[in-house]
Length: 101
Image 1 (tube, rainbow, N blue to C red):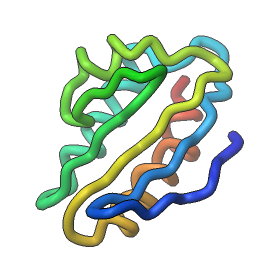
Image 2 (image 1 turned 180 degrees about the horizontal axis):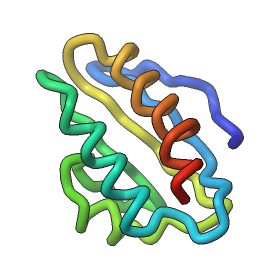
Image 3 (image 1 turned 120 degrees about the vertical axis):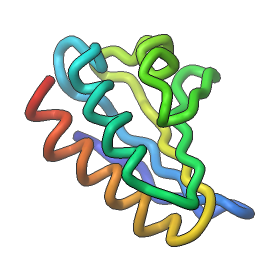
């Protein structure tokens, strides 16, 4: 899985990752990501793909992004410990979600 540089913007940190599993983000990996995102309190986590964004707490929202193999998915985090949360989400994505996809 390729990763872009972590970007620190005013009030948020984001990282873009490349989805490299064959069928992209379908219901199982989406459910895992949403469950993991809900573990973090006091932060706002957003997924962005092709100009569309959704809260990381929304399973339907994540599925509606239509993330396919080779797509870039940006993860934005705002709030307390945002860099730590971002790394947690990205690591979870690379290790757990990719294994389930």
